[in-house]
Every structure is written in C-alpha cells, then in structure tokens.
Amino acid sequence: MKYVFALLALWATPAFAMGPWQRDCVLDVPCAVGDRSYHVKEPDDWDGTSPLPVLIHFHGWQRTGALPVQHQRISGATRRRGVLLIAPNGNRKTWDMWSPETEDVQFAADVLADVAKRYPIDPDNILVSGYSYGSIMAWRVACDRGAEMKIRALLGISGTLRGTEECAETPDEVRHVHGLKDNVLDFPFGPGNDTTYPVKLWRDALGCTDVADTPYDWAVVDFLTLTRNSWADCSGGSRVSLDIHPGGHFIPHGWIGRQLDELLGRTPTYP
Image 1 (cartoon, rainbow, N blue to C red):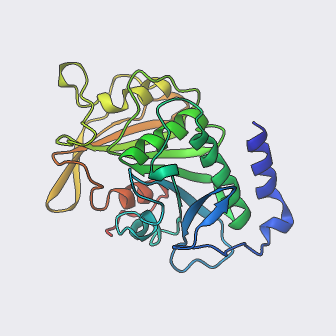
Image 2 (cartoon, helix red, strand yellow):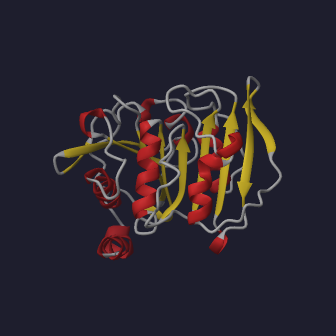
Image 3 (tube, one colour):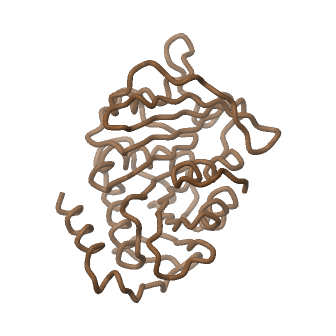
C-alpha cells in the first residue's frame, strides 16, 4: 500500500498540480524507468494542464510499445477521446504473466508512478488493456494490483489468464472481447461450450451472480457484429462484460473506442 499512498500524495501536491510537466518523451522516443521504458501518445487538443484519463496498453508477442502508440485501433481511439495512452515495452518483446507478482507486474506499477510525475493524471480513470499476450499481461496486472493501482477497468482483447486463477486484487470493472474462431489464443469455452466462461474468473472475483443481463448485438462497422453478455449485479457496483464475435485473433474495429466512450460517459462514436 506504500505505492498507493506515495502516488496519492504526488497527485495531491500543489506544486505538482501546477506543473511544468516532464513531456520529454513521446511516440518514438521512449520514457525510461530504470533500465526499461515505455511509449506515450498524448490526446489531440490537450490543453497541457487538465487531468488525463490513462490507458496503459500492453503490446502483443514480439512487438514493442512503439506499435500501440501508432496503431489506428488503439491510439486512434485514445487520442480522439482525451485519453493518455501509455505503452510499456516488454523484455525480449514479450511478458512474464503466467504467475503472480512477476517483475513485469512491478514494472507496470513503476510505469504508472512515472507517468504521474510527467503528466496530470485522473486517478479515477486509470485503465489497463492489452492485445493477445498483452491482454494476458493486463489481466495479470489487474489480478495482482487492481486495487493498489486503482484500476477502474480492465479492457482485455483476445487473451485471458487461466480460469482457475485466484486473484489477490481486482479492478472495479472488466470488459473483454474474444473471437470464437481465434486460432492463436483459442476462445476459452466452458463446460458444454459455454461462451460466457472467458470472464468467469472475474464474475467470481467481483461477486457477480450467474444471472446475466439480456445479451444484445452491436457493431461499429457493418462487417463485424459483436454479442455482449454483461453482469451488473456484482458486489460494490462492479460489472463485467464480454463481447464475442465470429472472427479470429484481432482487435475489432472501434472496440477500444466504444469502451472508452461508455466508461467516460461519452456518446459512442466511430472512429
């Protein structure tokens, strides 16, 4: 908990609240954290002083943080919605995420602390996301440090922890999307081909019942329809949602933007 108190104190310091901000590393120029680094993409038309929602996005296998900050379906969503995009670099272009409290989990916490030194961040809107192996890493961070890092929402894309995992902590909300024909990280069907199983870990951890809201279809592009299952009766006002689609291993057009719009109380738009 020392990390939380230190970060809250940093946010609350009057001199810090006035800046100036250490904006010396953006896009292709990474920000250093010890012997590691992360990339930053600022939102369009930011005034340089207003607190920013933060999305920490973990890249896929054999990629780096330089990709998400240039990716239309990732940074294209954040920059239009006033969200600061943070993309850490994994060691050897991958993540250590299969066991609790790995070096990469601490690295994620260190990145957030460093971001708070460089930018005025909104402590009520800290989000983590990832794609493929990066999604599993985002799940791991939320599972180990969800409360400590004050993670409002986990946005997972095509990658999950094992359903038998027990989480020490949780985020406030979980949103996940997965393709039924994913042949890279297979859709984790449950018993009897249950298609709601991918988020059972979070439904249990957040105290949700087995009664889901009525599923509904939605789309932002006419060639891909997603079906949403959600659970809004979880403990403490938490909620879990799962979007499934008939495709494979990819980031659906508009998915990140739609989640940000809903979380930030915006009218959903595309892109």
